[in-house]
Each structure stands twice: as C-alpha cells, then as structure tokens.
Image 1 (cartoon, rainbow, N blue to C red):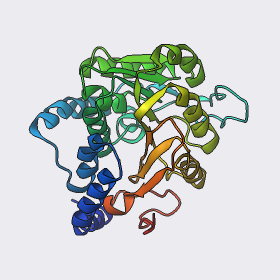
Image 2: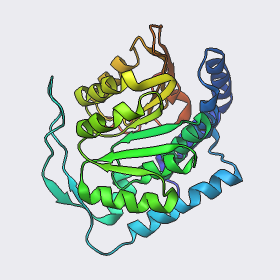
Image 3: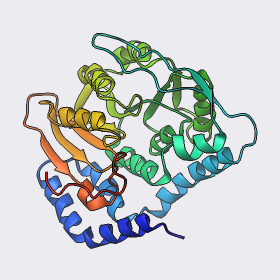
Image 4: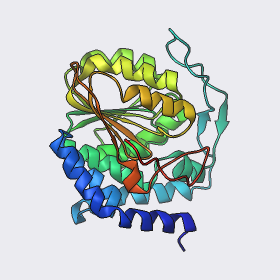
Length: 300
C-alpha cells in the first residue's frame, strides 16, 4: 500500500517528467558531464537496465538479511560535537547499541538513493571512489558495485561498524577497502597517495556546516577536473542548507546540482562562475526535516 505522500510524489514527478527531460538536455548543453545523465533520468522514471538490476539485487539481499538479524546490533558513536574553527577530528559522542533493523533500514541509504549513487559511479567511470562515513557499508556497496575497475575506499570511525561494513563490502566487491579511523586521521594517511586519481567523493559524515565545509576544503587540492563531490542530506537542517549554499558558490565548482537529498558538485579546479541547478523541483524527492512534505522552491 502506498502512503499518501508517496502517491503525491509519484504524481508530481510524472507531471513534470517532460519538462525535466528538457532541463537535463539544457544542463548537458551547459556543460554538466554526460555521465550524470542516467542518474538524473533515474530520479524521474525509476528505470534501470537488466544488467544494472542484476548488480543491485545482491545489495537488496544483503540489507534484508541484516534487517532480520536477531543478535546484538553494532556499537556506534552518537552524534559528535561539530568541529570548531581550526580543529581536526570531531570529539565522538557516547557509544550506543543500535538494532540491526534500524541500521539496515534507517541509518543506511535507501534503495532508491543507493541506486542513484550506483548510477553516478557507473557512468562517471571514476578511477578512485572515496566515501566519508561508512555506517554499515550499504552506500559503499552501491558505489563499489558500479565498477570492478575503480578503487573504492570508505572511512568509518566506529570499529564495530567498520567491521560490519567490511563484511558487507566483501560480498559485493572484495577489492573495496574500509579504513577504520576518524576522518582527518584517515585523510592524512590517504590523500597523498590518492592525489591525481580522486574522481568521486561521497561526503556522508557529520551533517553540519562547519564540518562539511572543512572536509570539502581538505579534499579540494586532490580533486581532478571533472571530479564529482556528492554531499548527503543538504536539506537536513537550516545549517546544512547554509553549507550547501556556500559550497554551491565555490569559485572552482563549475556546476552545483541540487537533486533533493543530495547536492552534486562538478569540480573545475580553476576560477569559474558556478552554474547552480535546482533539479529537486522535478524529482519529487525534496527533503526538509523542519517541514516534512514541503514542496521544493520554484526558483534557481
């Protein structure tokens, strides 16, 4: 049975599917990488190919098995205090135990948005994928399933969750790597060797402005022209909306695309005038924690 909001979203997306197709075409004309086209179209029509569905099914199975586990759930850090100016590494919050179902279905990326990540990674063909914030490794599984030729790394501060993520990733792509460390410590270790090959980054750690911008700035010297930086939960709070507003105006970003849950930046690397695209108005996948169900703004 569909919930009323789901019905509204589906109807809204269908009504705007034709103008959305024109907008995608316009975005391509303006220089948005062609590799993003399948992911953007998926947000409208929910269609994947048979081979893509075959690659995604094992992740669905993995999530279902995790959700039905009856043993003790993983230990995770509660929300850490946001970084302060000049700080490295957040102070972790208290450790707590979560239920497996919560970890599989609420803490982890949904199937819909996981498919979106998969398509971004598959069609942009990155040499190296880096994720900040593994949780149970479900989002990393979507990214790592996209290409066996890409190197996929994900960073997780909780040792319990890092073990869960590593076990899950082994089922999907045995070559994927989990780094159990606080973000800044891991970046100190990884960035020197990744410089020149870092083509796709998924930032899904601390959902606050100061921390998000801090990690974005740390990564900038190691990005290539055309690299994708995907920011999770840009409409999580007023603080995250301010973070996205600042990020989208970064002079070395050629395109900043708001698709609802995610904000996607295309890195230029040199001074340019960032083009901002509000694609969330077409997807029916807006997210506003302070006003659930609110329609997206109708202005770029």
